[in-house]
Length: 165
Picture 1 (cartoon, helix red, strand yellow):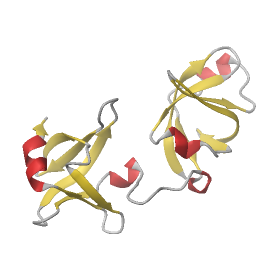
Picture 2 (picture 1 turned 180 degrees about the horizontal axis):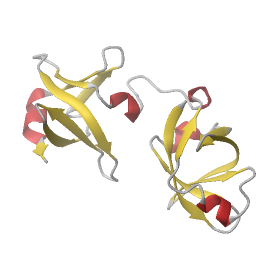
Picture 3 (picture 1 turned 60 degrees about the vertical axis):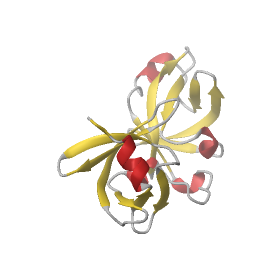
């Protein structure tokens, strides 16, 4: 099971819920069911709107039931999700990954967290008990190796862009 996001809030009076996803909307297009708080829910409808992603779950037919799901993590069977393309990965795969210089092999630390923002996501790296952040952009973060759990970076751009928290 893979955590795909969490229930942000109830939406409307018919049991619809707004979802904050940890992956792209396209990946959940064929999703048939989810697990929330240990209970399996079949999905009636998934809708992507300007103001977010919304699920209508079977047997969640009123606002009160939907409100009881708010804040809960949502899990899905990874086989039901659209397949990853080459050099794509889940954010969960990145947590605790080594950050390594592409040309020098220098270890810059481990990824400890990721924040998602509209313009660019932010990656937090910890080394020697110091945490700093960087924009998660292709110019810096070049390639992720799932087998070695290492993210290779452009050393110069990495060192120029890191911000100490």
